[in-house]
Structure formats: structure tokens, C-alpha cells
Image (cartoon, rainbow over all chains, first blue to last red):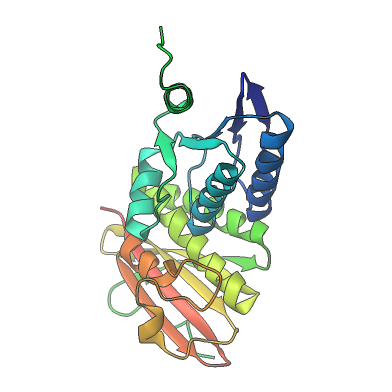
Length: 123
Length: 146
């Protein structure tokens, strides 16, 4: 299933809706990396709240997405990693390395606002 | 091909397994979803369900990556009144020449991260691997309900 990507202000939000196959993840990568240019986005959020499993391929692909998007000049934050998923990732030895994470969509947006407009005050 | 069908020794009982053929990436998703559903029926809850699904995902991924095809067999194991799940990942692929090396963290010959087998061992309670070069590999793991 193709992951819907919403545009909000100068951010893109990829909101994963169901379990993803490897192909779906690669499609998400290609879509996001392309759309960052199309919409001249400065930040992207990948919401993984519904994922009940993140195996080595999923984690590696998320890392690749974040690195590619950084090369395109935008920031990425992964939001919504569930406690059980975090536990399994740590046990497996999987890390997102330098990729930013936030608790949920709201925190992800706040993170991007902070990172991209550090001087602007927020209400 | 090493025989992976031997009955679990001792007092452990074993139910007939659910076999899932692994031929494509879509089968990985199928295997881990079936595994999670079965584990819930066996009495697992919370992070155990995620851990079991993640282990199945990694094992199925190994099969696909190194052997192209194979199967995952999921069954209920019982020790006294205690339930557990047994996951067998079986393929007739190239086999593993150096098992000790394959079990080292960070070692990989494929496109993976090298977390596969040692990572799965950390996730599960019991881990067993039998492999013969050019014949295939059978990984058997178990997890017990707390």
C-alpha cells in the first residue's frame, strides 16, 4: 500500500497507514525524496505509529530516507515509534543513528519548527 | 539436508505447525502477521508479540536473502503447563560455512546489517541452528510465555 504524503506549510508528512512490505518502503523513499524537490519542502515527518514491527530492513530504509532527504537540503524526523517496537529494536541492535525522532506528530512538528526556525518564538 | 523435524525432546509437547512459504518480500509480512496472531492465541502479550513478530521477520528475511526460497513453520510448544511458540526457518539454500562467524554481531555476507542471527538469538529464549553447505539451513527458535 502506497503511503499517503500530505503537504503542510513547508513540511511533508508521510503517514503510514498499515504494515508495509519492502517494496512499499522503497516506494515511500522514492516518493518522499522526489516530493521534497517538487514542493520545495524544508522538513519531512515519517509517522510510524501504526507499525507493530520494525525489522532491520525497515530501520535501514528509514535511515536511508533521512540521509537522502538531508542531501536534498531538508530535515527528517521519525515519529511514533511504539514502546514495544523500541524494545525489539534495542534487543536486535538496530539504531537510527543520527536520525531525529520525536514522540508523535505534534512533537515532530515542534522539532522541525525549532530546527528550521530557531529564532522564531512559538505561541 | 539436516533433519529439522525431530520431535522436541523431553517432556515438551509440540503441536502441528503452520507452514508459510517464503518466496517474496510480501511473504515476510504474511509470516510475521500470522506469527503475531498465533502468539496472541498461545497467551503472549505486549512486547513479546512484537519481539516474536520481529524475530520471524528477520528469519524470513534471511531465508529470502540467502536461499531465495524456504519456509517458516510456527507451532505451539508446551512444557508442563507452560506455553511457548516455536519458529522454524528452513531453506535448501547455500548453507553457512562458518556458523560461529555467522553468529557474531556485525557479520554479514549479504546486504543485511549483520544483525540477523545474533539479534534473533537475543530476542528469543532458545536458539538452535543446523546448516550444511550446499544443502541448507534450519534455524529453530523458541519463546516461552512468562
